Image 1 (spheres, rainbow, N blue to C red):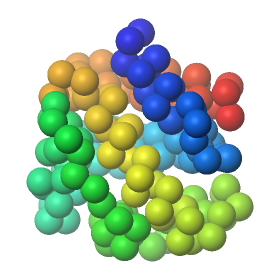
Image 2: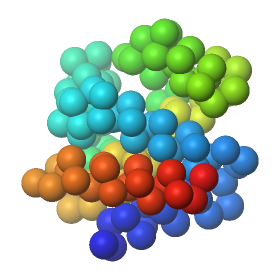
Image 3: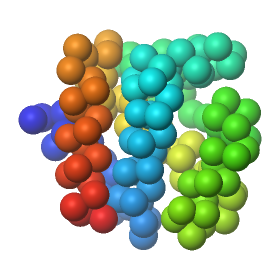
Image 4: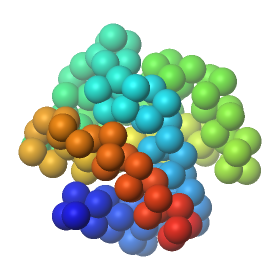
Length: 132
C-alpha cells in the first residue's frame, strides 16, 4: 500500500484547509474522465501531452494553471467542484491545478499507469474521505 501512503502524505500533510476534500473531488474527477488513462488522454488531446507525460513519468512534474485546467476540463466542471466545496471558481481551479499533477504522479509511481489503477483510485478516495 506504499502508493496510497505516499499519496495521503502528499495531500494531507501541511496542506491548506479543505485540501483533503479537494483531493477526494480531484480523484472523483479522474474517475469520471475514464480513470488515469482517460484523464491523461484528455490532457494529451488538449495539447498538454508534455505536462501529462511529466506527471506520469519519473521526473519533475510540469505545472499547469487554472485556465489551462479549465480549458481541458471545462468551466462547468470547475464550477461544479467550486460549488460542491464552497470555494470560488478561481480557488477551485487553482487548487485542482496544483493537486492534479501530484495525484497522477503518485498514482503512477513507476512511470506508467498501473494495471490496478481503478482499484487504487477507489482505495485512495475511501481513505481520503475518512480523513477529510
